[in-house]
Length: 57
Image (cartoon, helix red, strand yellow):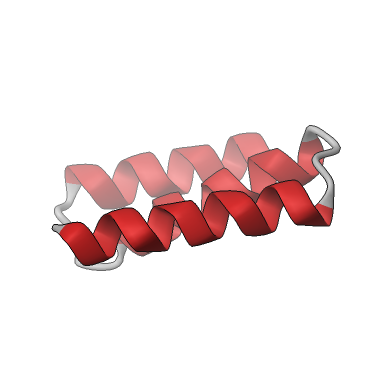
């Protein structure tokens, strides 16, 4: 499945107010980073930062 197809699926989930849409969107963000050639350290930093932000909410 291509990233474009994944984006479409996540958008459909958001429109349907699917409870898993936020999780899927986060996973899509990581997939984009991999596709852009980000290093594992950059991806880990992004994920850790995101988790810290979620803890503050």
